[in-house]
Image (cartoon, rainbow, N blue to C red):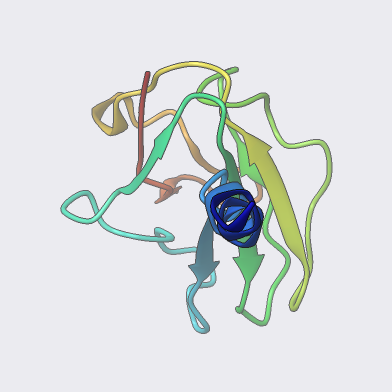
Length: 112
């Protein structure tokens, strides 16, 4: 019984691993959200929760991977959930801010 209770206490900690958080830094504007030497690392099945800590609206563009194209722009203080459905190599450079184009890259590495 004690082992079961202990496992119940740990369950929320493991569930949190299904959500990976990324914060678009304040002052990003039309620049890349992160750098190629520090891509966000996720696994297929996880949710990448992107928080907008910037002062402008952002909008996720993808070509269908690692998650579907963003469905709506998200303003300062808001977030967007990108459900990782396919592997993706950050060197593809097809994920960026839809509002600003490919110069506003978002580097993600998604593995099985």
